Amino acid sequence: MSTFKEIRGTLIKSVSSDPANPEIGEIWYNNTIGSLKAYQTINAAWASGGNLGTARYNLAGAGIQTAGLAFGGREPYTADTEEYDGSSWSEQNNLATARAQLGGAGTQTAALAFGGTQPGLTNSTEEYGGTSWTGGGNMGTARRLLAGAGTQTAGLAFGGGPPDTTSTEEYGGTSWTAGGALANARRGLAGCGTQTAGLAFGGAPTTAATEEYNGTAWTGGGALSNARSYLAGLGIQTSALAMGGLPSDNKPLVEQYDGSSWTSTTPLTTGRAEGGATGTTSAGLFFGGSPGPAGVVTTEEFTGAFNATQTLTTST
Image (cartoon, rainbow, N blue to C red; front, side, top):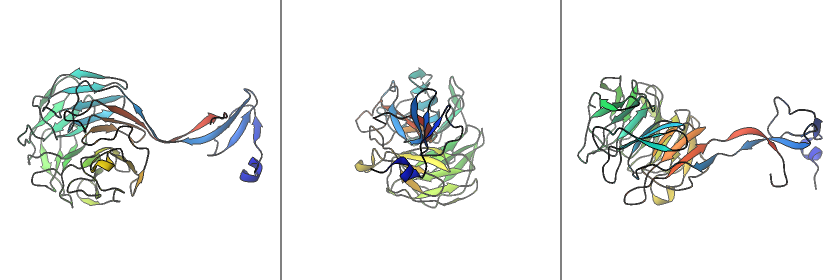
């Protein structure tokens, strides 16, 4: 058996306190507490969160992992709005208009809901102030199965249909204006980021295409490793997650984007499509979705990979 010195070229150090800036893979013995320690990468992981109060799919989301917002969806079509506090969901005031397959953006206290189906197509926009929804400016193009990004005062809506469209619109807090067109017309796509640094990926017809928005135009980014539609997305343009989706073998799949390419990361515990998502690649949230004729209440919390000091045991 090789020794640590033969592998690393150095002996395990005995120190009275943990080093301030250890390197990945570094091991030491803390003689003050009598423990063998190492600085290691902790893999990304999904953990169960509190269930939604209303089972549904084709819903939208906003906010962060500890202050999330879920709204709309079906089955049946619902106006239901719920807030997440990091452990459980609570009912809030409903959307003015029940709808599904809508877009969402913003935060828990300043969210934006737009487009969708009632089941007829709608171009209506609603703004959430942390307590209730009020009407905003209508979109120029009524559509469903679109994606959204940005904030309540600087929102972005793109894709959707029918017919499948390349249309992009920017929200300034009161009204929508036309933005640069997507290169690929599609519906059932995912998006994240901001109005000036947006990201669009996947969609139907089933595609792996990724596009990046700079506030004026879309350009091609690295393709998903697995083409899929009806997926969910979260994060920013340079650090995003693509979760779940169709075909059926993609439902648990999760990929992470670094600004140029996608790589597989820890899959969902419960595979599904048509769910809602929000947060970051360090602390994300995925909720609702299908399968199931009425959708599911399942919520999962994502913790991204990170480096940390661990005490080594026989099971480490």
